[in-house]
Length: 220
Image 1 (tube, rainbow, N blue to C red):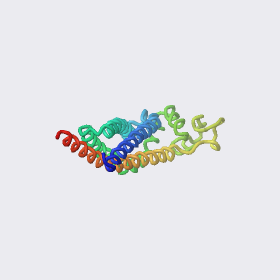
Image 2: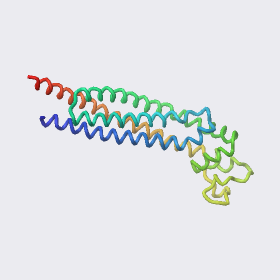
Image 3: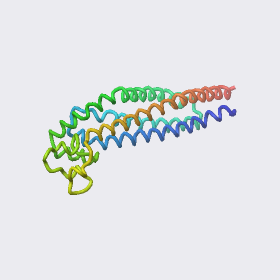
Image 4: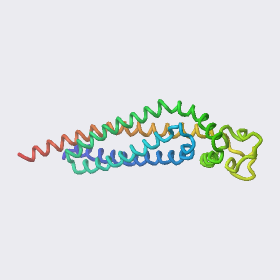
């Protein structure tokens, strides 16, 4: 094996190690968001909060498995494994581009709807809404003022007695910031992985071509 092939082989191996870690990161981000929004999903039926985190979990899991497959193909220099890996990576790359575009295009519109969804949830079931307050450490849709003259629930404060002075800020702003932060994080991570995947696909095809030529020469 020449120096060029040696470098391609191990660059591809370590790139796939990065993909495996990035896949786990996508899974972790997806699970973190899913756990946070579970309280909202229980009472806000019109909000499609689960689409992005579930998609991130699925894509992250698939990326991890295919990256493991790519590591084996690179080490063994198996033409069939490398070509199959390249095809799968191309499909995944397109899927992640779609995910990132959907997140960046639709994120603002979803965030703008959060105050309305939370107001509906607040008026629908106060007891369940307290679960959102405990999860996000917030108080009412707009803060303590949301409860008017009613005594504030313990979920509105970090300590008791719960008063206007020590109450958390409104849930609308807190949840909006949460979705902005994690939405951008998932989209940015997906696009970062796509950029490196493109290089990995080219390297995998080059290594596959080298393995195929080497196999042909061994026959003569």
